[in-house]
Image 1 (cartoon, rainbow, N blue to C red):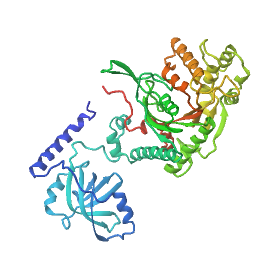
Image 2 (image 1 turned 45 degrees about the vertical axis):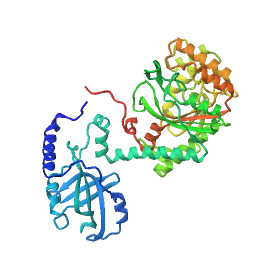
Image 3 (image 1 turned 90 degrees about the horizontal axis):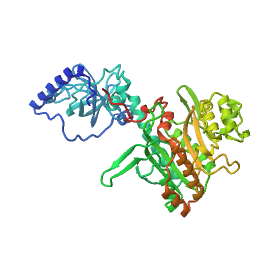
Image 4 (image 1 turned 60 degrees about the horizontal axis):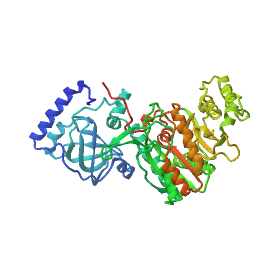
Length: 494
């Protein structure tokens, strides 16, 4: 549907009149190409030492969007993807044949300009226009310059308009690209192989989440958009494609929307053979700290007014220890499900009568501890009940060798010593299926082919997932996930 307000129609009509006038003058308002030879930022750098009042003999061709016009178009602020350059359109330099075009230009039009580089007596780097070419006639007016897009919903729904108006929005999404490129470079430097796994899966697995369902017409088969690439990446370890594999992938979870959740999101997931979850802690710190250095120039950042130090090493603490520190309840001293439920209810938590020891510990952590973890913290040793793909802890069978990394009260990474015992894995899947039968829609389904793959033998391995969108939020000081996704999921209007 068209999100353009009706109030714009009168302005659109005026611009359509100009479009017709341009064509009567024989000017094509949507030509095919323009040979650009210079960008605004590069000109700023190249001519930084050019003295005020100096005109060079250097001829350049620049192109961009008209964002301001003064003195009937004599001065034009032209914005390209790198910055702003002033265009000086004066009869002493501009061919007279171009003045009818100049009178028909509007804010938002995209033009190409050829001319000599100069610095005005007032010190503004400019191009003395010798020729102006209309490249795109804009039919809708831009938002008012100084107030921009006041409606935050419009910013997300019409992201193209937000990007035109907001240098901050452009820079955030450019930082996103740099963050992903940095992670990819760091992993490849460590010998990781980038791979791809299916987005359409017959059995959604690798995470506790509700999937989206679609239908393949030719096969007459319901399929699921992936909630995680985990089980396929592990199959690649089984096959020996590489000892180190990773995928930066899109995942889809049919769940709620919040400032930290979008149904479609980007995840880094990697697996390394012959290491455990301690190696994954070091990997998490390396990727986040080095990416912060690459994008921000420092590992000491500020997020939403809070100073955060990403310098390794980060704090490591068990879930049970953290719960005991905050609540005074030591779940490790409790040896049965009923007492664990009573302990959790004693600190104000609600639990069903079917909740086991691990559910009580995990619920206490989520409700009482997560929000207190401001500085980077690896929360170790998750209960077995909530970790169906993880090796049992080597000293406490109630726990697993799993950690999640928390910063500013939110989860950024999830990692395991990966379960590679096919008999244990089958038993875990069966327990998950029982949970589904009792009403847990997010419990994992039985993937018999994955169990078969494990029976051929997967080496011991560490696995790690990092939420790219949340990492971009952290490194760009963005409060909402919608700010770091170019086109977030939104409810349709009207």
